[in-house]
Length: 420
Ligand SMILES: *Cc1c(COP(=O)(O)O)cnc(C)c1O
Ligand SMILES: [Zn+2]
Image 1 (cartoon, helix red, strand yellow):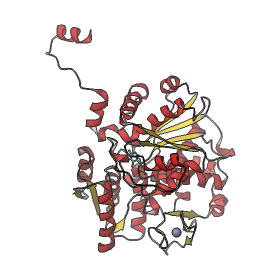
Image 2 (cartoon, helix red, strand yellow; image 1 turned 45 degrees about the vertical axis):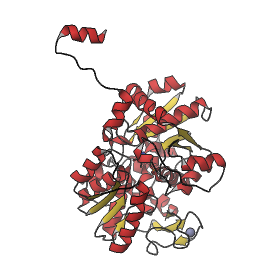
Image 3 (cartoon, helix red, strand yellow; image 1 turned 135 degrees about the vertical axis):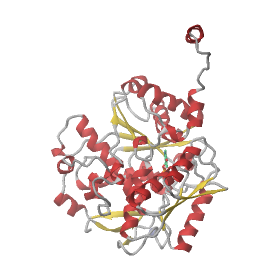
């Protein structure tokens, strides 16, 4: 596995060998970036070679991942990723944008972006022969770990806040994970998970702690470029097409950090010509990273999170520094949107683009609306907005966005009356 050469700390810059550390920097607790041997990869692979793969999952990017192939072609792990990239023309027209794209990661096997991270973390767990994998989760990371662990036959333990939406808890249970609901916040569950992993010797998948989650999440950046190239009927021989800007919702900040890593990988390999501007979108009720961005500091202060977008309800973002830099180092920005605008975004995505998003998923689009209004993006720019989670995960929120259906007696007169 020569392409995986070790880790670099995002705080102090120290490097570590692949077997020297497991989670974070021993010096300062900083999150670790996985380092790859770009020369070795570029010598053997090219965008054109990867574009010929018939594997329609994240595993088409195995040459750029720090793990071995975790399963045969028919394994459910192979259902992760390669989610559709749409051109939502009505949404674009409404916003006055000429080149808008929407990637729907709600169509992953457990219906959220988190499958990308959990698939790679489970592959790693198998490699290091972990007996049990444990994670804290607001719901989706746990569902993804439970699903991927079930696919690989690895036991999983999930700690989630008691307030997690019922559908997400149902997912945890149906995949056979040991599910423990904590009478506290996600942050409480997070800290308890670290203690448990340490005390019991289990492998911990926690977001913004385990370096392999971002490696899974970066595959969305690869897909965006490769799928744009195909959709625009460009040849991959000259490299892949890269968008000007990408919008994604942010809680812990690991998705945006992973996307940043993915684009940086491709740039380092010479497979794209630039890294797009990355825009992180938070709820005003959970805006720790937005606050730091707005204040122009890298000091991220915890908040007391309160938002209906449960998947991004985070007091202290665990990948805050890298998430902040994903915007500042690319010329992007952070945007905060109130819950009311998130509900509006859910309606717009459903009605204008046929995409059913959970609140945290629709938050990215709500942020794009603000960015257009504030002139942070130009009408002709090529923009990709991600939906990170499926609306069926939180039906209560969907009903809040869409309203209730009308009930009538079964006769035509009543139907006529109601239809006006
Ligand atoms: C986890 C999650 C996010 C945010 O990802 P972070 O890495 O915590 O920033 C956004 N949307 C959905 C649906 C999620 O599950
Ligand atoms: Zn360090």
